[in-house]
Image (cartoon, rainbow, N blue to C red; front, side, top):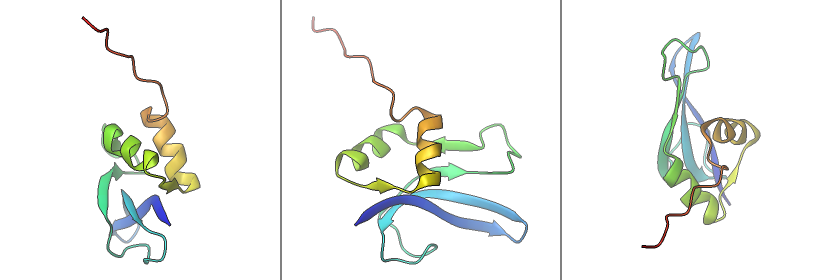
Length: 89
């Protein structure tokens, strides 16, 4: 199964995470299919959470299952909000 989850990087006592699409059988910090963005839980920068919304929607449409934490972050970035439909001219 394809999952959207966090992959840890950064030094000891200074965690940073990548939001990645990966096979659920791979290890947490192993290879991934696509990097969707990053997350800094300590909020040391003003852009502590950045996710490519369009790519996240693409993977969710393909059947990728987010973990609980990834789901919370996706909701914060507005992945599940409806996009306005462009008016046909």
